[in-house]
Amino acid sequence: MRAVVISAFGGPEVLAVAEVEPPVPGPGQVRVQVAAAAVNPTDALLRSGAQQAFLGDLPGPYIPGMDLAGVVDQVGEGVTALHPGDRVMGAVSPWRPAGGAQAALVALPAASLVATPEGMSDEDACTLPMNGLTVHSALSTLALGPGDTIAVFGAAGAIGGMSVQQAKARGLNVVAVASDADRETVEAMGADLFVARGDDAARIVRDETRGGVDGIIDAAKLGQSMLAAARDEGHVVTLMPFTGATERGIVIDRVFVIDDLEKAEAVAEVGELAARGVLTPRVAQVLAPEQAGDAHRMLGRGGLRGRPVITF
Image 1 (cartoon, rainbow, N blue to C red):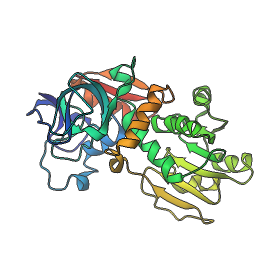
Image 2 (image 1 turned 90 degrees about the vertical axis):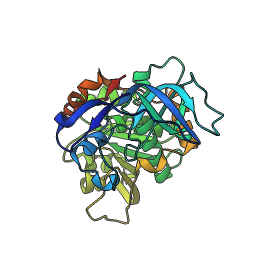
Image 3 (image 1 turned 30 degrees about the vertical axis):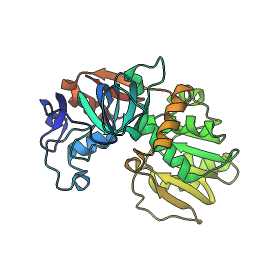
């Protein structure tokens, strides 16, 4: 089968398409004939060698990708909820012997898959699982209740946008921080208050919310500079390690989506939100597997308001 592979760490030019052995689904697993796989920043980290610690002693070449959508091809022993021919979407770890999502056939745990919402394309569907699960974990970690206020930094990005949408679905008041050019897009997602990004954004959030928000999702990876937006003893969730010092009793937690890929209940909730139209798929560009390097260059330039998608 064809797969995008990383034979050596480096720039986008190291990505290639190769023929690899198709996987065989084990007990509790499902093999998916992949129609579309999203390209995320974590793929660029894998390609560059920044994630070698996660790979351990696994030999290359490595298959990148976490998000996929397609059709069930085979089911392993013990799988009864999914059947060949079912359209599914899900997320998978690229740091395992079988590799990630950017391959024509992928075997992964049945607990990592949900039905693709009816009427949704595979290209759209594959942009939802990993980011949706990341946000689900972030909001569960914050444990805010209806009426509480959350600030989302980087609200126009893929994770930021889903943070706004899922927070609203939980009854939270949402302050969205993004580029002024993205104001209309972010407000259409349901933000209650928009603040243009900039050096004073955190202070403005604090002033506008009369003492700071209850929780923050730092999808912009700002680190310490966004703490001013939180109230005393507030709660912050980051997507990267936080290297600074906290202040005013603010609690800081990091979410790592790899811990949630087989949490069937969370995966199902993401699927249900997508089926209801709460989560908005955002495709930046559809590319062939041979154009994987171009997808990584797009990520490197920044400013994307969606994900590149590779189709098989």
